[in-house]
Image (cartoon, rainbow, N blue to C red):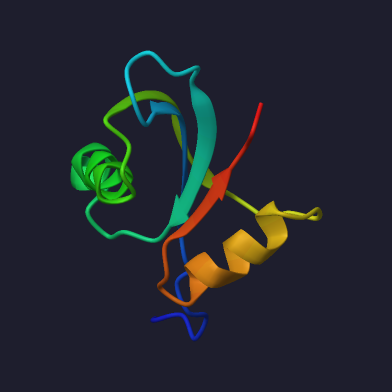
Length: 93
């Protein structure tokens, strides 16, 4: 018997160190996005970072958020990701 409950939406979290130029200190970014093709997630994340002007990226963690974050800036980013947008949080340190 089919369930009336809709499938929960999966929001992926990608944590990376990025560099605009090789000699710069790395900056950490968090990408929150929805993507059906989990196998292509790495290439997709790297392409997003390249489009944002980062010359180099080292992916540190890739996972899925199992519940809505409670604190900013991740709460807003999560809500944006649920609408199909790609949310990127850049950290200065």
